[in-house]
Each structure stands twice: as C-alpha cells, then as structure tokens.
Amino acid sequence: MDKNLKNWIKDAKLKGFSDYQIKQSLLKQGYNERDFEPGKYKVLIFIISFTIILGLLTSYLIFVEKYSLNCIFADEPDFCYRDLAIQKNDFTICKRTTLGNEQFFCYSKFAYDKKDISICQKIEGYSRTECMALVTNNAALCETLSKTATIPAGQDINISPHDDCYTIFNHNYQNSSLCEYIENHNFKDKCYFDYAINNSDYGGCDKMNDYSIDPYKSTCYSFVALFNGDYSGCERIDTMEDYYCRGLTIESCNEVTKKSHERLKEPCITKIAMKKKDLAGCEIINSSWEDGDWAKENCIKYVNLAKIE
Image (cartoon, rainbow, N blue to C red; front, side, top):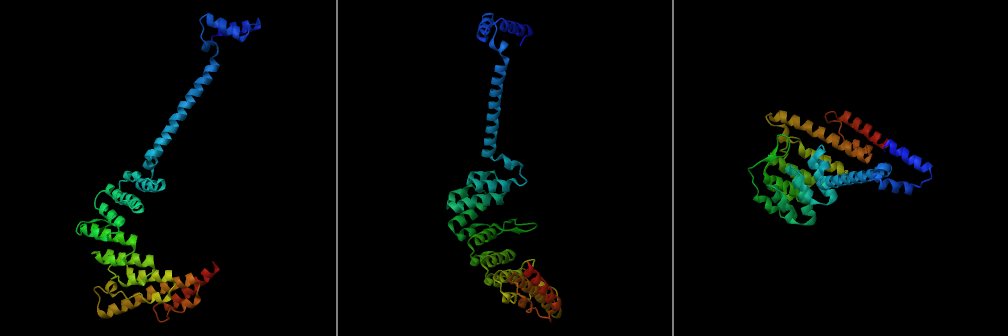
C-alpha cells in the first residue's frame, strides 16, 4: 500500500470515520479495493494458487496410476507391468511388456483364468498358439509349431517352439504322457522331472534317460524321496552309467559308477533322516560305501542338530 494513502487512512480513523466511510470515500476518489486492502487479495490469490497446484498434482498422480509410469523407472519394467496387471486384474496393462516371455505369461494367465481365447490373440508370435493350447486344454496345437526353429531357454540353451509348448502345457496340466512328444532329450527329462517333483511320483523319474548335463535322474529320486520321507526312494538312485562312463573302459566305468551311486545315496538318506529327526535312518548308510563311516557320523550330527532346533 502507498505510504501517503496509508497515512491518510490512519488519519481518517483518528478523526472517527468508520471503515465503511473510508472505503466509500476512497472508491469515489478512483482507488481500487486492492490498493487499500492488499491482504484480502493475497489470501485469495494464495487459495487459488494452492487449488491449482493441488489439482495439477492430483491429475499427475492419476495419470501415473492410469498409464503405469511408475514401472518405467522399475529395475525390471516387464515384471512390474505383469504384476501390476495381475494386481489390478486388468490384462490391458500386459501390452506394456516388451519381453516375449513376460507378455505371454501376463496375457495367458488372464486368458486361462477367464477361459477367453480372444485374449491369446493379443500375444505375438508362436506364444499365441501356446496360450490357445492352454486355454482350450488342447495339446495337439503344439504339433502345429516348428520343431526346427529355436528360441532362447537360458544361457547358451535353445528350445524349439514345439518342445516349449509341450513343456509349458505339462507344467500347467501335469500330464507326464505329453513329455514323450518333446524331441529334445534334455527338455524331455526336465519335463518328467517337473512332473515327478510336483506330484511326488517316482514314475516320472523312472522315465528319465538322464541325458541332462547334471545327474538329473538321481536328483529326481532324491527330491521325491525327501518329499515323501521315504528312505527306500534313495535306493532307486541309479549308477547313471550313461552319464559317468563315456570314454571309460568297463573296469573304470564299474568303479566310477559304484562310487557315484554311493555318494548320491548318502545325502539323500541324510536329508530324510534330518527331516524326520530319525537317527535310525542314519544306520541305513553302509560302512562299506566309500566314505561310509564319515557319512554316517555326519548324518547323526545333523539329525541331532535338527532335534535341537
């Protein structure tokens, strides 16, 4: 407010004029209200500015939420979009994924849960057929996919769309008979392994040929035995001649497989004994096995520790 105007108002009040009389006199002289009541307008301007800022902030948050912009800055945006789609039960968010696998898992979950094959149409490439096979429970659709083309299935590992389809189908429906249609021996073993572990069924392990890089068949028997708390399952562990004996003489092979057989049985029995807190299980470990005495002592130690816990 102007200093002279301020002094004039102060003088008028001392002479006994009311605020209304002073205001009317100033207006007749051509003054504007904001010239002599600036505080009133500052408050109004603050309220208007605050309302605008709040509105803009709310609009931004709604925009971020609607378009999932928070996933843009996530370490793994595709996982973020997939999880967000499931959380909000909105499959339209799946289109924001860029990785083929995540797009498939995102759309196929909704398609399977809703039994809506039209959602599969939104998936690009061969994965569309995999989705349709799952939704319609029709494994025969896997036969329409290429057996020669390859897609990444891990570091330096590839799989054909045909085999990938059967692998995913079996994982979802747990039908071990479909594993036989998988042409890649490594993935066929993994298919049987997946079935055996999920169903605690030695039958899946029995069908494995142990073509895998790891001694997969023995691991399969060990896992199922552990899940079942079944010591006899450990006896199913094979010598795995195909895995250990490549390039060896018959004599060398027999020695190697004997040792591998024993070494794989020991941890299997020990884990079950620990799970059951059963010292009698440790007695199954034969002292004649290589490192048998040490393995038995180790088993007893771990079972006693398990009992304390």
